[in-house]
Length: 163
Length: 283
Image (cartoon, rainbow over all chains, first blue to last red; front, side, top):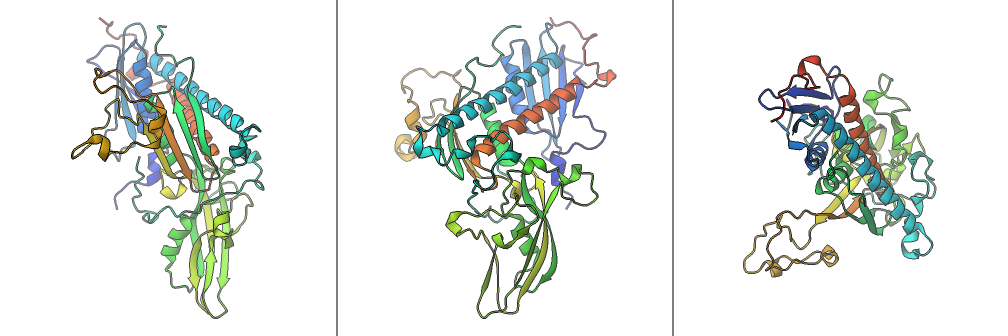
């Protein structure tokens, strides 16, 4: 009954900063990034990407409470750089990583679409031009499987998605 | 900058093992577990689709109660390849709902004959030709059974479908299931199997085990080894094509990271002193 609305998980309330930075007075070159409305998805990749950087001495995150939709990410670096700087770099390289995954995926779909792969060709036909979903041909796109998602609770019930 | 924290120049690799209308089986390699897991989590919970969110009942003399039917209708998968053209209702400029953030459906059926009249999801009349209930060959193009009517019973409803993500409610999930596996031989010992007599006999290897070799059990354990190959098996509910789902997941993640980048570039509050000018020098 007192549970917060589900959309609170991912909509940033008005006047709230996406990232607020808290300085750690006891550690040099150390900042805590409180990232609003994000979860393990983002925190874990950031943490790992930060740890890859040899100038980062410490990087860890926690989710303080399951009903408080923000994460705390603490970063300590050597004096050669700043936590903000390494965060920027990490975010940048992660963006590139997902871009690379997508282009690798594109290339693979393209390969499947090649005439030599007749067995998979029929099903992979939608590959061409799927960069824009709006432009996809709806007539040739046949959608399948009307599987019920199982007996989940009602609209306001707590629906636990198992991560 | 010292190297090591930049991405592997070879970059991530993808090999699609199987692709059909509803499923995709692919191997993602040369990347980190956290990245593979973020992809999985995003596909399950953060790729937007369309789903019925509001139902107005004008007439319901069937034996199912209104809220029961409303819940059933919410679960009906809707074709969502045009989901990017829609706004989220809470971001839309309209007061209630409009064409830019929703699709309306009507259903008016009355049973006038003897016997049972079965009402299928394909009978929902959409106001948008791109957003319709999912049907497939196997069900004869009829879709899902919504309810059954006897003679004299009538249903007359008006549904409003909205864009959303599965974080809010599982009905918006484009995934029926995501299979995710790495290190099928348990070389990294991330798993500690329970067994009675023999791990080998009691825990059969998955099909993915053919792709990797098992470490010599007598060799010293490499505690620095990390998983690099991830086996995905993504099954959709039909609202999105599986290849589009993977594609959209990478984009959703990039958008999230882009949002963080922007938030970092925003001038931070001065008292937190983000530029660390007066910080103690690192010793």
